[in-house]
Length: 73
Image (cartoon, rainbow, N blue to C red; front, side):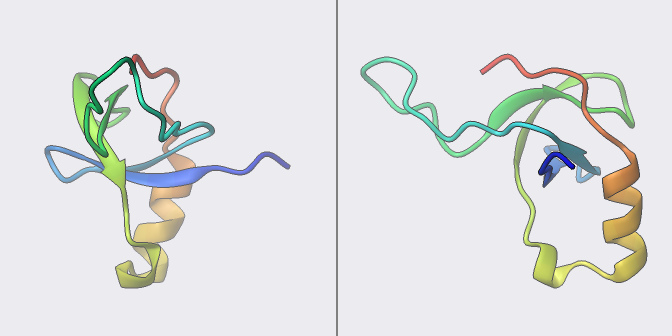
């Protein structure tokens, strides 16, 4: 089974992604967020790792069912 990370987009939607690289892209760090297409609204959004300890069981289950298909940075 692949490991997935639960993330929250800028609109507050929770979903999961199979990769969430936390690396520097060039000489300047772009910050903790990454551009990912949100599966709920279908738009490219800045997304950050969600604090899974603060989520309820239904929120976590829903986030794991919604998986992002791609990321840009």
